[in-house]
Length: 214
Image (cartoon, rainbow, N blue to C red):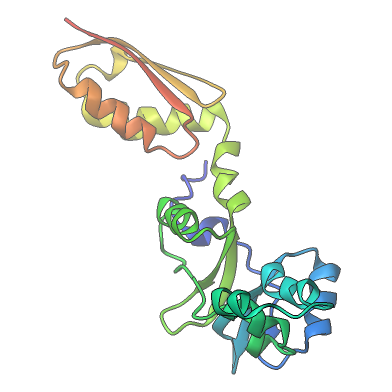
């Protein structure tokens, strides 16, 4: 049985659609349409990520196509106005790219996405070379784990660890990712610890502790 995928490299997509710094505007649009993606890493050299170009970077071209922004609008949206006149990925891309390392935990990747308001992250090594890409959907793959897998891991990594002398008396039930712990234990102060450890098992949706002291 496979272990829980704890790091980005376990769930990332290794085949990545990307463009070079000098890719022209229309090539970027065609590539996005062909591969049905809304953003792509921009690479230089042998594959070092230098930025990301997204649909949001391309839209100012259409927004300002038939109108001239006022002076106040130009001041408030300098970046968008500049991108409206851009013709290559070098001018369009958001830089530096928001990236993540392959050995980052899924929680770390999710936190970066939430804080930086992005839907996907290029995965790079220590020198910035592209290794893959991870999306919100990739991070949710852990919730596809079966109840049986989750139950086995909870028994092995939580119950046997915290309650070695009572593990035979503790019942673990998992339904749709919700873990229920039932049984009698000697030290009730460990209940909160058990809940925290079970919640950390990837694929767990919620924990219902029904543990009582002897």
